[in-house]
Image 1 (tube, one colour):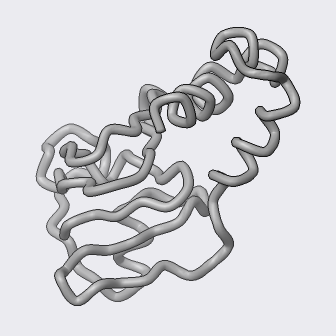
Image 2 (image 1 turned 180 degrees about the vertical axis):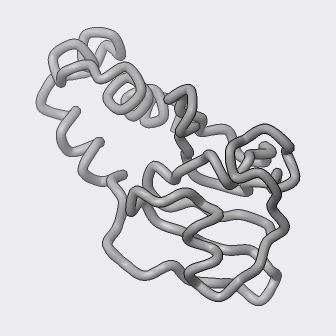
Image 3 (image 1 turned 135 degrees about the vertical axis):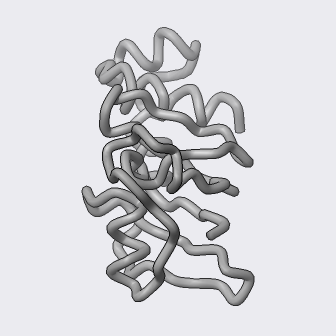
Length: 126
């Protein structure tokens, strides 16, 4: 699992090509496209669990915008990443900070949903 996360980090965060990713991870170049394709965002509408967790997909919008479009009303303030009012727990998935461009794949971390977009499927506890 760590190697898959590293392949995705190198490919999406550092924007390395397949040959560079393979060399860095000590894997065969032909395995990179399959690994990346298997973990690309699925095309589906966001789904919501009864536990107040929201599952969102990578469609270019912030996590806050997707939650609101789904009819949820998570607390927010400035919508610029300054006030931290919108900070929520990400239970799984990878996200990209829209201000810094940093990608994070750590589960169970707090993210500011107004300035964070999903990279693939993401689950949030709202």
